[in-house]
Image (cartoon, rainbow, N blue to C red; front, side):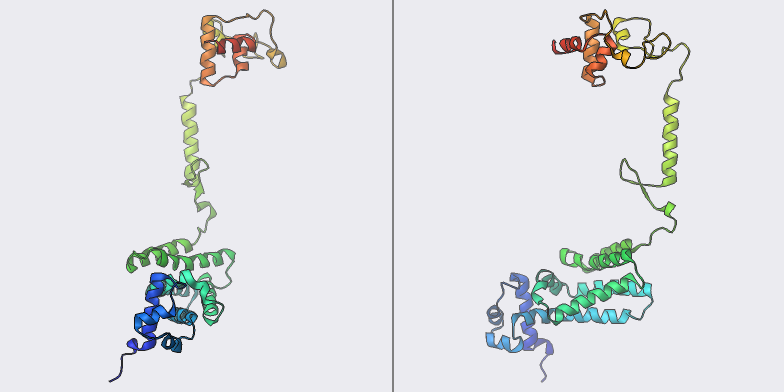
Amino acid sequence: MTADPADDTRTRILRAALDLFAEHGYQRTSLRQIGERLRLTKTAILYHFPAKEHLLAALVEPLVADLEALLDSAQTQPTEQARWTVLEGWLDVMLTHRRPLGMLFHDIALIGRGDTYHRLMEVAMRANDLIAGPNAGRRERVLAVQAVGACSDPVVFFTDVPDEVLRADMLDGARRLLAPLPADPAAAPHLDPATGAHLDAAAGARTDAAVGARTTATAPPPTRDTPTHVSARDAASGSATPTLPAGAAGGPASGAGSRRRRPGRPPALGREQVEAARRMHAAGTHSVDAIAAELGVSRATVYRHLTVQ
C-alpha cells in the first residue's frame, strides 16, 4: 500500500516547523523542539534539512513558485490585461499562503542571500514591470510598487478578516491607486486653501462671486446725511458733531503731524471717556496709541486710567 505523500517525513517536518515558527518565532525554535513534536531525533531532521535555514526556504518555496508561474502566464498578455492578471493573481497567492507569508514578513532577513532571496527579488521586479507597463515613467513605476504592496501587506496585518472580504477591499484599493488622471487638467480636483477640501474650480469661482455679492448687498449704501466718521471721543462725550477723517476738508491734517500731541489736551478723562477707553482696550480692537488719539489725550493718561479700576 502506497503511503500518502502528504504524510511523508519531510512534509511532516515542514508542517511541524511552520506550527512552531508561528508559535515561538523562527529564532526561538530549535531543531530539537521540532524533533520532539514529531518523535524524531535531531539527526533525522538534519537528514532532510541540513540546516534550519533550509526549513525556512522550503516553507517559502511554494509561495515563490506560485508567483513565478503567475508572472509567466501574464508575460504574453496585453498591458492592461497583464496588469490586472498580476495584481489579482498576486493577491490570490498571498491569501493561499497566508501562514508562511506572515512568517516571511518577520523573518525574511534570515533567508540570507541565497537562491530563494534572489528569486524573491526577481519576482518583485518582474511584477513591478508588468504592472507599470512598457515605457513607464517614474510616476507609473512608483504606483506599480505601491500597488504590489496594496495587494500584499494587508494579508499579514488583517489576519482576522475573512479572505473574500479582505480580497475585495484590497482590490478596491489597488483600483483607486491606479485610476487614470483626468484628461483635462481643469477637471482635476482643486483644494480649498481654507479647508483643504476638494473644490471644483468653476463651482469655487461661482461661490466666491456669490459671497462677494452677498457682502456688497448687506453693506448699507452711504448717504449724504451719514457722517463720514464718528470717533470714540464723540461717542463718549455725546457730541453731535462728527470728527472728519484725516485729510478731509475741515478735518485734522494727514501725515505725521496728526500724531503729534496737540496743545490743550486735557490731563484727565471724564467718567464716560474712561469707560469708553476701557471698553476699547478690553475688546482688543484698539491699541493704547489708538485710544489716546481717539480721546485726544496722552498715552500716559490712557495708561493711568486703564490701570486704576
